Image 1 (cartoon, rainbow, N blue to C red):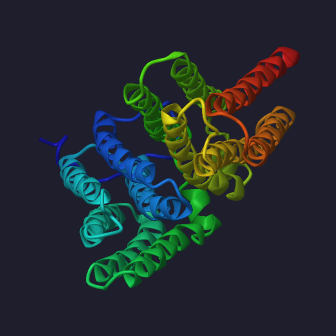
Image 2 (image 1 turned 60 degrees about the horizontal axis):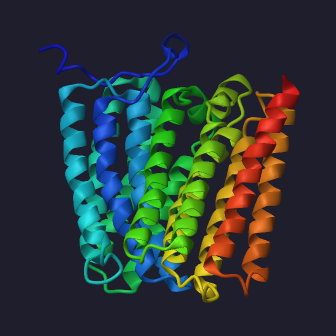
Length: 391
């Protein structure tokens, strides 16, 4: 019985930095976000336009932020006790409600979306309150989270009863408050309570896999809805190769060096950059999947429409750009030359892909996605050559 009635405890520190992996509960929790992300990606697929993309952002960011809150709590305080399991179970229900309301989250379901998100944040506040009661060292952080997150949650709650489109302005205000609470916490909090250097990268990697899975699903759905022919086969192969390249470029450079730098160099800039660059990265991966699907579904004998061309090119360029920035966060503690070189490769590749968005007006869908796939494959080749030169 003692196992289930434990209090939260600090899971980080010099004496607790052994290899640590995600728990089964965390992996189960992620499944609920698979559904939510699938729904919001489907929304963008129905409206490939600037307004559709902005609507996608307004729904995707709260989903990502919900996952971040739960992940950081588990990273710092998870003892897998009965209280944590029950609060996580309630969060799962709230995330499921969030997914249900995403389909028309900017329309008639927007109030339901706001209330579901409010429930997620209330449960997170309760978890941090509980941790603060038992861990004196963590109280500066837990108190800050409870106040900032609590204020943002209140704004979300009020937004459910405010007419549209003013409701969405409340959402942006609430997200600004919540992001600002963490970003302005200061060195004393971020360095003293820097997250676990092996657990957190694994958790971010798992979320990235979820979003990459949407790209694979997009290719499969696109082919399933298309009459099978040589052009669609080539487009599908190129789409899968893009997903594989993104997997390679991210996971071949995944590590906790930015977190270690926060402790060793008392520098939180690299650590915060590493964390928050994952937001545009996952946005880019998700929207790249939508772009790939539309390329596969396009008539191979016609020029790819500009909206689809810009979606896939700009999305992939965003992925490559953020990957480059993420590599640079390893400069403060890793081999700086290798990180800097790989970041340079990504920045050049992002520029090339954006050039294709401008200059590829006359390209067919298969030609465009083929060129993009080649740009991604070249990145892998450059990385492999660099590894060989360092040996």
